[in-house]
Length: 511
Ligand code: XMP
Image (cartoon, rainbow, N blue to C red; front, top):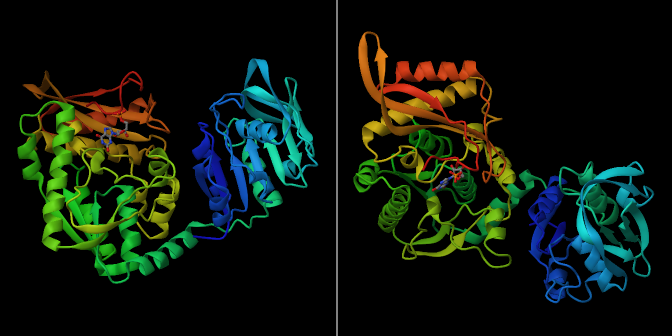
């Protein structure tokens, strides 16, 4: 892809992806690889530098992960972080000891700012420490360049061999100026240039895809989500009309969303697009189903059936395009090729769709890089920054059984909520927000008439990882406006409630 590469050897630490991202934020391409990568493989990859991550193990453990012999003699700069530093010390003949007490939290580290690693730093700096073992005696040829009251060797260096170790975690936000430590390693020690930018990634990918696919045919399942959209546009820039996108519109997307997807792909990008309007088919399968997991399963399976039928009409495709991104690859097992990403998180594409090879043009990118790629390709910002939307769509936001009428109510209410959030400028700070059609009817009064209609619940959460999250404290005036617009503008809704539960204990979705 490019000449400059930093290899990140994964020793099982929880921040490994973050290290890779920090390096890339410095415009240097990085790859996370298994800790036991062979010397041959490293030489083949020819990295400018190597980073050992932290990890939960202790060098004293029998099964603790060890690096390949000879890695420190390659002449390639190495930065060991936490366990990585201890391993470097242990392997090169220094002493690692076990402290009686774990050191955890942001700690003031006194550093030697004449070291290239700490160029531009004050002599004291707050870094996140999280360890029990520590380096008691540095290996021959190394010198101490940092300590804390309870850790005598918080940073060490061997300038001749370009080997560096730090006990703290520079990759996390709690480490003030932590990224600068990484930058210093990249630019002062590894002599990187920092020329990895998204525009060169895009240019390079298009060229490579052209070479790989030539004038053969490729097929892509388009969901309207960010990853598959960016993958499709990238492919279409490379092979034009030899790409066919199949957009299975299950009728469970948000208001106007299906049309927006069609407009962008057909008109703006002139992509060969087959939109399959299959709402009736999905609703028929979902009729009377109330169990959320059953809904998910039915939608996943039906999606595959529809895709498969359309793919068969086209005939043989040489390539199947997948929107797999780097976290999927890392999570699915390092070094192994990723399994086919299941569409809509259920099922998976059928193995009897006739294609020869999978192309995953985004498999080296993190989500924020996928978004940047999308913008670089000219995909509208509102699609690129779209909030996450579950594969089963509104089916899991209509509580209980799903009907066309209920979907219409929900689409209208949800669209009002989203519009008001955008008007209030809150769409960037709230990470996911939507309406839910509860299965509850209650009594109301409109004009002189008694009503007995549905309750809409509003859900809005602030989160970075979607694993945990807090409910968003939307100002009352905005909630008031949303509520009054929904009951006035959406037929069959006479009550609006706001979900004030965080995750955990509640989930973000209601089903
Ligand atoms: P929960 O409800 O588990 O949601 O707190 C966490 C995130 O996952 C999304 N989500 C799904 N996404 N298929 C998807 O593609 C699903 O079945 C599904 N269920 C939940 C949810 O929107 C949130 O972003």
